[in-house]
Image 1 (cartoon, protein in one colour):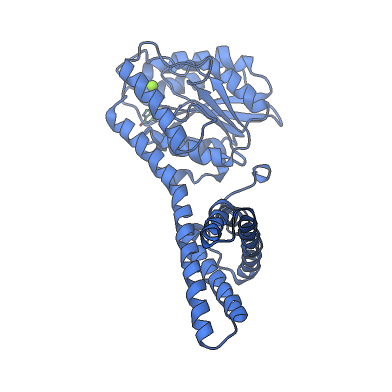
Image 2 (cartoon, rainbow, N blue to C red; image 1 turned 120 degrees about the vertical axis):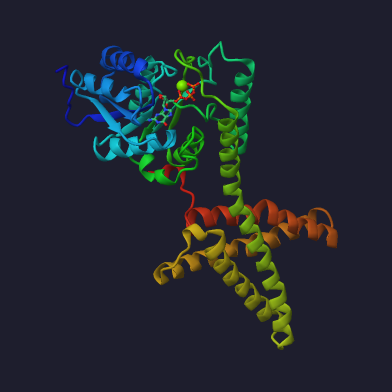
Amino acid sequence: MGEARSYVNMDKVVIVMPAYNEAENMGPMITELFEEVFPKITGVEMNLLIVDDFSPDKTGDIVKKYQGKYSNLYLLQKEREGLGWAYVKGFRYAVEKLHADAVMEMDADFQHPPKFVIPMVEAYLNGADYVIGSRYIKGGSVPKNWETFRKLVSYFGNLFIRIVLVKPKLHDLTTGFRLTKVKGVLDQIDLEHLMELGRFSHKVDLFYQSIKHAKKVVEIPLAFASRTKEKSKFNTKETISTFRVAIILGIKDKVRFIKFGIVGFTGFLVNYLGLEVLKRFGLSTYFSTLLATEAAIISNFIFNNVWTFKDKTITKVGDIIPQFLKFNLSSLFAVVVQPLIVTGAARIFSDSPVVRLFALVFALIVVVIPYNYVVYNLFIWKTWKLPWKKK
Ligand SMILES: Nc1nc2c(ncn2[C@@H]2O[C@H](COP(=O)(O)OP(=O)(O)OP(=O)(O)O)[C@@H](O)[C@H]2O)c(=O)[nH]1
Ligand SMILES: [Mg+2]
């Protein structure tokens, strides 16, 4: 038996390493991690979990051989389902069976040189809850022997995803070398329902879901190595799938905003038509406007509740009442701000129909709509969290 590492009250980091037909790499990888890398890391207990899909080349048997030597080496064997599933099942095993505090994604083929585990774990120890091994920051790189085409696809693919997902501050969104804290980040993600679990492109969805919950994200430069053995599996299908995932994720968030806009417009119609109908019933202009406005607020609340925020629909009566009152209160904002902006503009420019129209449109687009959208997401349907409230 080798050195038994078992510490009390020490955080546990589990490297989840999928391996399919990596018999040649397995021995050197395990040895390098346990002999060269883990001894240099203090303050956490390091573990390695190999996820093998019963590789025909007997990768699993090699791992079993080393398990006699290293007690923090684990093996999960299952049927072949694709890379994403290897990670999902590996994460589940790491969290539920090994009680991991953080998990790492890492390849078995030395494309992620093992020494980079050290700065990544250090970043975690310094408070990061999501650490990205980044090829596209200073000090990081892609293999020199990659053909120009692959370099271009990787670089512009990344740039494209950064733009689509609106993540300008992060540089490598498709890397396969990452560390994720379990509490507050990994445990908030519905792993089994990530997109494209059969492919490499699940990485983009996993990244996107992680970033939503992570409070402190750190990028560590990664010199991505080229595959030493066998032929590369990089292909057009994988590339297209990666772009597809990015586009779908990019649109998903905007769909809510579009629905919100449509509901807002129906609210306007309810308001306007309601006013005219009530006037015809002989109500005073003041009461007609008041009732029509409240009718619009009620219909907006209902449509937003069952459509715009259908993944967060409030159903309990005990919740509907306070949230509806909040909704009413937030609607008051428009009542206060719109007249201020319109009269302000009329004073500054001239009190003409054109100025009033422009001022009203300005108030709606620049102030009222963004304000409502933020309030709904943050306080009413709670799809967003304030950065300091993320757990
Ligand atoms: N368990 C499991 N591991 C897999 C599967 N597919 C890939 N892997 C492993 O996941 C890691 C990354 O896969 P690679 O095939 O190297 O993918 P890549 O680095 O994008 O492409 P290459 O340029 O071919 O290296 C390696 O450790 C593989 O052995 C799978 O279906 N099941
Ligand atoms: Mg590889």
